[in-house]
Length: 116
Image 1: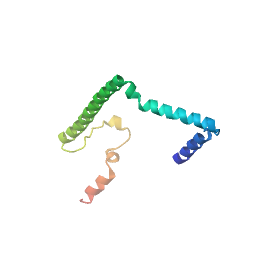
Image 2 (image 1 turned 30 degrees about the vertical axis):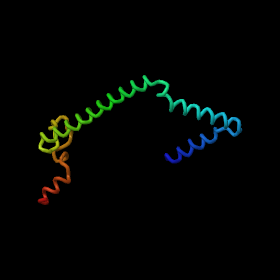
Image 3 (image 1 turned 90 degrees about the horizontal axis):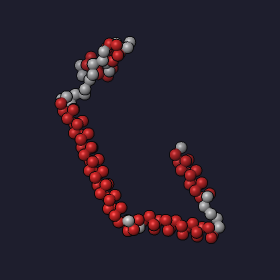
Image 4 (image 1 turned 60 degrees about the vertical axis):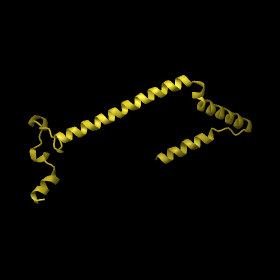
């Protein structure tokens, strides 16, 4: 389905292109000017690019810290449990009509019964 969407968007893009040579030349010139203006932005606005670079560096340091923190917390919580997953006890009221046998995973029960 996404291949079809891409084909439709590309077809629409080609359909709206000008067919007149003068219009094509004008569009090419505008596109080239816009690309040049975008590429040379930091040459014209050095202070803004330096400030943005500092903000980006600070953001990346915070993101790295947040990722390391999340990893360390997850690792520490599994180590404290002896690599056993945490289980919460569920009250009878919260279970509704489920019985304890309904809550036990079938593949573990069969392995234990077979002595595996």
